[in-house]
Amino acid sequence: MTTRPAAMTVPAVRARKVRPAEAGGAPPLVMVTAYDAPTARIADEAGVDLILVGDSVAMVVLGYDDTLHVSVDDMAHHTAAVARTRPRALVLADLPWLSYHVSAEDTVRNAGRLVQAGAQAVKLEGGRKRVAMIAALVDAEIPVMGHIGLTPQSVLATGGYKVQGRDAAAAAGLVDDAIALATAGCFAIVLEGVPAPVARMITEAVDVPTIGIGAGPSCDGQVLVFHDAVGLEDRVLPRFVRRYANLKAEGVAAIAAYAADVRAGRFPSDAESYQLADEAVAALGLLGGASKSA
Ligand code: KIV
Image 1 (cartoon, protein in one colour):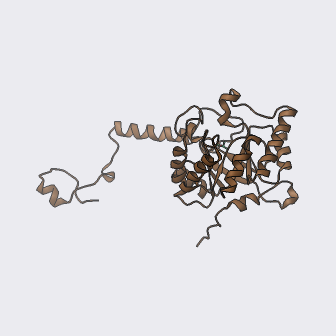
Image 2 (image 1 turned 180 degrees about the vertical axis):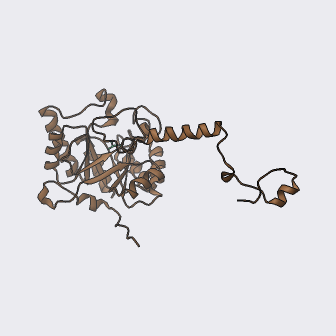
Image 3 (image 1 turned 90 degrees about the vertical axis):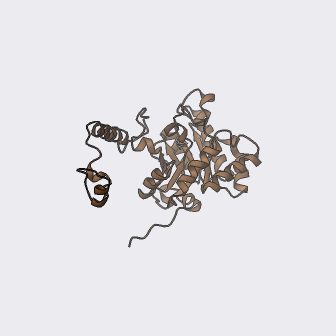
């Protein structure tokens, strides 16, 4: 009998600070997004540490052009599907746009909905200006992960998905943001779309793990969007994505083969069909029908 490793918890993630290396040499954290039961099961069976029910669901699953179109209801729906699989990995859900740009009371209520749907922690985007909401969430015992750098919910304000922190002032601003988030109580921070040397500076400046996406190798962990990693999403290939499979192409080939079989009368076969018992064939006066029910 194989023993299942212990379930991940927020304190276990918090303790996985890799840098500086002398802190204990823990292996980097592995996070991937998932949005439903099958993707959650694949991620968990693969042994990831954290499953993020990302608001990227808007783009990679629901067909929107940005992440601004998902609601707390949408996120709760997808979080519940992931949580029902009872993964060993920690389940984390994104607070969608406008769900924490409101009063502290409404922010806590919105995050609470995601926790009641099965999230063990929430993630929100933004730096120093989010400190009050993070404090309110931590006060309500809801663990929070920060997310700075390229923050997709800011796409209208920034005018596109652009790498952040490219000049000295912007890089220093990101370091200050990260310190503010860690001080406010975030247990980890996603760094998205920042130059690798800036991610390293940030990682060395905070005592909570950083988890990078497009932030180079010096972070305490890495995250990828599920559909990018397995090649289900093949419309764009950002520099930071490594594609580990080509499931979209395999899926197209599989469905094309199915269509060809149906059109040529090759599917379904007798073995893939239910049959009647001989007596029923005789009683119905069917000639030449295969007998014996499957
Ligand atoms: O929604 C998402 O997929 C994310 C990751 C890019 C970190 O926030």
